Length: 397
Image 1 (cartoon, rainbow, N blue to C red):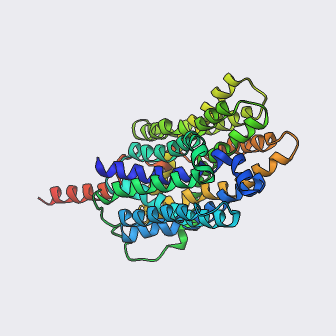
Image 2: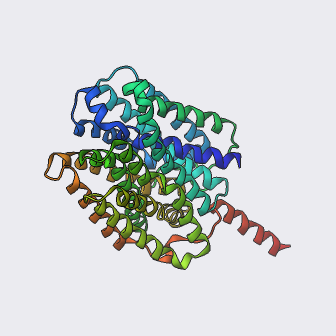
Image 3: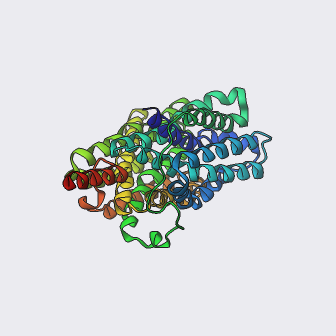
């Protein structure tokens, strides 16, 4: 249990950095003396390096041990956010976020691989993923509340503190074995050409990547259209926070009802996209709370199936496979965050960007893999390997 708590904590430490800047984007643009598009580049800078380090981070976890690599990632996250505390200078914040992306890029697949190496089922992987989206949802609530005291430092100070707290937890967590078959090998470039992983990458890029874009700009969209700031913050937090509940639910469906997982994933992608489009409409506050809740709930379902499916497809390099799939979401965030920021300069002040995101989210349902591709066994590849060895031993006796 201590190991699972540490693994989930790694996901939360990574997730906090996803929306901590977006939570106070308008105020940061004033503190830094730049436009919203430049503030969007803070997140872009992070996800450039986050994306680049996904596969190397997962491979490093396979080779050197997930707990060790996750520890390094947390140290980088804490140090990079500490750098951003120095002064409200745009280039310094961009540099700090880029360095932070190195830490999040290696910590996230390592955290998932750590859960897997402990024998975690798809349900536990869902809890790990739930923590990674609960954290940015909490950040959307906490960071604005602390801004009056900390000013521009609020998003960075809180991110550093969360990383250090999780680091302390991870240091007393149990060690896990390296992936046996590929512990000493180089990264297999065939991973990048594996068509089986492309569909998992597509559904994760939409469900997670596009929901992060929505979460980062939801508060700005709503306040631009005269909704109260406190309500806008609460509505925006739901787009990420509620994934904490449905990410484990996606793992539960995969484990207990594998024949229904394809339908559940496809339906969630359509629902998330439709709700995002509705957020762009001039709805009353009550309706906005409902549609933002749908965005958050829908975004969580595909997480565990996508990651478990990637491991099922490539049991020879599970950490790297997860890194590839998660890197697709990083690419979506990297491209989409500044583009939606630019949409605020177009007619409708951001609404066009949300409509486009919603359409893309719905179209991704066409890429949903077949039921058999997800892999419904609730045991990790290592657990299955030990089980096969036990079966052989029993037979020999």
